[in-house]
Length: 85
Image: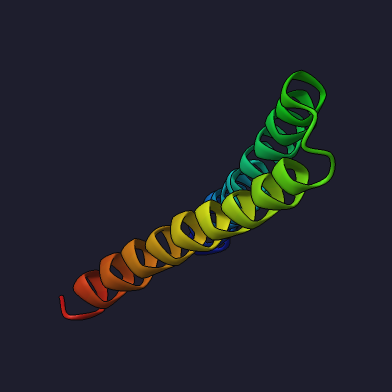
């Protein structure tokens, strides 16, 4: 019975880790890819090749850094809160 509880707890932790990894993957891929494509489109429309492409990459990286920082900050804050009890 004790092994079964421990195994179930480990499975939940594993699923949580996989879920968090997927979330981080999307937090990285979506903003960078989206702003990169937006920059390419803007360069094609306004004829500013490669200025808006680089601006899109920089904005995408900044957005990604901000989102990942806040995601990790909330996770650490939540872990510290649970460790107190």
